[in-house]
Length: 114
Length: 114
Image 1 (tube, rainbow over the protein chains, first blue to last red):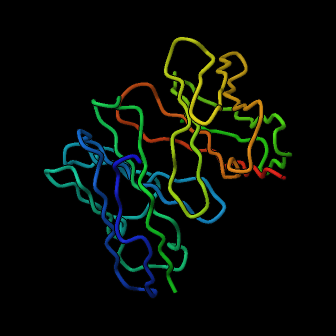
Image 2 (cartoon, helix red, strand yellow):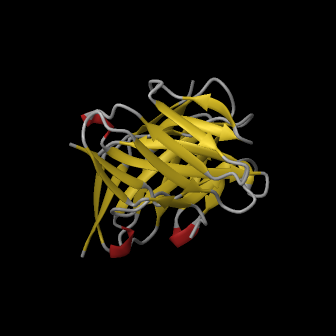
Image 3 (cartoon, one colour):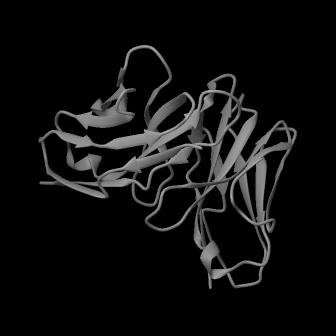
């Protein structure tokens, strides 16, 4: 148990729709990172939030956006869904209590776009 | 930029036999190294990490890994595997400064055969 929770666990959407995924960080962690894991692949970095500000972004288009709230929970929003967005979305939290370098992952949200 | 190569996509091994999962990385700066395990339909669980100090790192579930800077490797080993070790294993690196993302390999599927 990492203390990182994600909701929902599964989601089915159709092309063109919008989706919001949620993540609650481990207590004491102030940094949240989001990753996309396509089937049979390793996780790919989407972006990171540190104290409510975006702190780095991977090679994902602007229709992938996020928020971090004062309690360090976070949202990932994806607009204009495409079939290739079908994947497992993982959030990871880290912070000074556990070492900024060590990221602890939640169970993920599996998104299917039809 | 950093990159990670996991040399074997699949490793079948008999129960109680030893196993080694290979990981090589590339980076122009100093990095920290991690191994994560992913059981079916679950998120990532931290197995072990190398930050500094002794190059032999022990983790959970009897796994250990050795950091070899000259060969830029971080191979994962277990002297005797169990059926319950069947999972996907991911090697990852992160720069040792700043809030930077994890860079993952493509994973190695370990299948333990009874």
